[in-house]
Image (cartoon, rainbow, N blue to C red; front, top):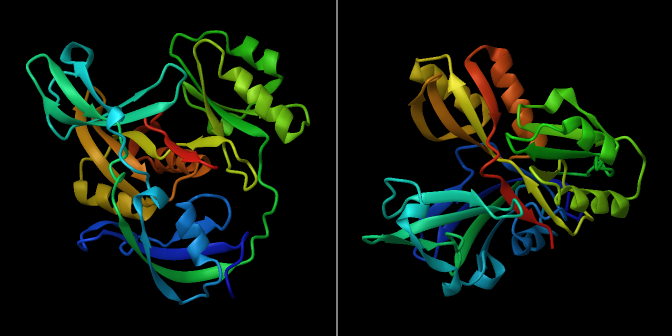
Length: 307
């Protein structure tokens, strides 16, 4: 079946630099699944697979402007060490949020006596990239209507007026996808996409509120949507061989681990994430009895800019 816009496609990819060094590959994981036209991957890659067929392979070269953009030296900032976490060193990745709740990520490039130089450019910006693509499967997308009736909301820990917030925006809480400072709400009233977008924008102005975004990416939604791709877990298990088998089974990658008052703590990255997927994995881990707790990491959401 030849790929058209709207098809469900499974594909393997290997991303390389010009010198052949691999920076990412799906070869050791399940194939990446996308809906063509929903901006889940780099737009030029998405355009390049239209017309391909199952089993077909192709190599695509992308200039920086068609991949992660050119470097912007204005995004290299020098900041006081007093405003940064203790113990940072060259290569440390720092994550935070802007005043309006948007996530920020930077890499420490230099540490001086009283300041540090941070680079807020994407780590792949300014680089020419090469992608080897292998189409595994192509199917028509039977789910033409995606759910825009739900919105994920993170609360500042000091927020106490959830009931008033729900009443103001005519929302009902979805208990299946709820954590202490992260809730999923469904709009009670039927409304157009434009009306819903206006309400979501209004929510973003509320004190103590950070609207995470639509739980599903709508193919025709040209606004910026945000999904989560990381989970914080506290393990009951101490057998690391068993933990590794769980990570492999769930399609998870351990980014770091540390000891906490609740035992072994890990930050896990979800491969091929969606907000439903992230929350479902949390529920699956808790139900399995292998963790004390599992919840979305609200401090490092992944931005998908559908433009």
